[in-house]
Amino acid sequence: MVFILSTNIPENKIIKAALQTFYGIGPNVSARICAKLSIHETARVGSLTTAKVTDLTAELTKMDLENDLRRRLRDDLKRLRDIGSYRGRRHAQGLPVRGQITRSQISTARKLNKVERKG
Image (cartoon, rainbow, N blue to C red; front, top):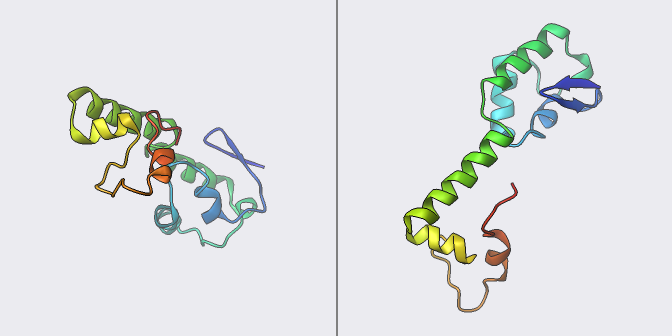
């Protein structure tokens, strides 16, 4: 197990997929991080040297990840609700926000547009 940003990552996992387990890192960002640190995308986490792991940890600490992004999303939604904008009211009611038609199929939108998003 390799310990990166208070997360244990199995040694047999591919580095690109391991980076995507962090909230806020998708396929493109993980590929960009691997290219920046000159790590092959299909390399395993266990094959990384200690220096590469520390470089990777330093690169990840520069980014807003996990709780910071969740807090920012929650604060943005709260700000929209507080100022009383159309989007804020739609979020508060749990209705579609981006102009979708609500006549027949809004059950999915009600599931996705909860007032407090869990992330």
